[in-house]
Image (cartoon, rainbow, N blue to C red):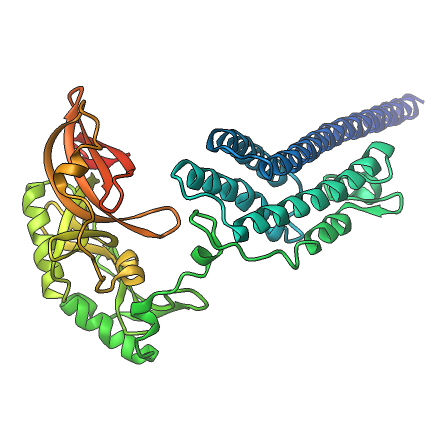
Length: 454
């Protein structure tokens, strides 16, 4: 009897534990579902907020573009363009917060990048007395039409979201956090239709960083060069590196870029050497020796001279050093091509020098390869003295020279470069050598880690 009672007590205890475990599991599952549902609601609200704000911004862009077509003064167009620029940036930020990784919205993002940029350029043209051409006005009208179409399409999606016909997340079939296909609607399909409306979006060529010609930039230097094979590229790499080139092996190649290349690597002695050779012309696009520097033994000026000699040895003559930076015992020196004393800052090569041995441990020449050519530099239309008259009298000028500087649009401008001091800080002021326009002002940051510009 005692044995039977003991067994019954064990059974009762076991059943009690199982029931308690079942209840605990049920409660845990219930609370987990509640937390998941709460999380989904939070995520959905975040997506909705970003979407609704984006619609508001685009609605405002549409209105401002209409106003821009009526603006007849530089000040008014500058105010409108500033609003469009800010609203376009905010709209693009909102677009980036939406769960759209499964589809491509490149054209929509491109429109938001260009619309603010283009109107800003037009306002600057008016300020500088250029005015707006018939072609530019037509582009402005076209941008307005696309903004209106985009606003209307997104407003229709917004109405469906408000009515509950579609939403960004779906809690059916355990697809939490996924983009939804709900109640007869699919947000992804709707957004893809919006993207398709930009299929005929015109190419905009203008003086701004998002202009079409920048994306399609080609190098005259590389385009006209003969294409080489992978084997020939390997020989070029070995020739460039000398003894360090022994043991290089093919790693990968890049295609469909302005500077297609073959890359070769070598792992030895705890370091890695990589060198990339352009398919056209067999030029060194970059090389990098990941050597570890533990002690600085040579001065930066010595490193600069070693870098200059290295460039001359490899056929890059007439290069002038400008700025440098020190990181982890390595000095990276910027060199720009000098044509008859005029520095062409677009033709840039960066050289890395180890400050323990003075060895060259890196070079990057894409700027030079993409932009270098012999330029037809006409004589300045204004004298140095006249150009200095456009510089603030607050700047104590210490040196002057001619320079070709690139703008955001990649357009180059011949300028007088005035270096000087103001409030115990060093500045560079660039004055257009044709019309005296103040093109740029840079602050020189000098410290123990280098000399940089902002």
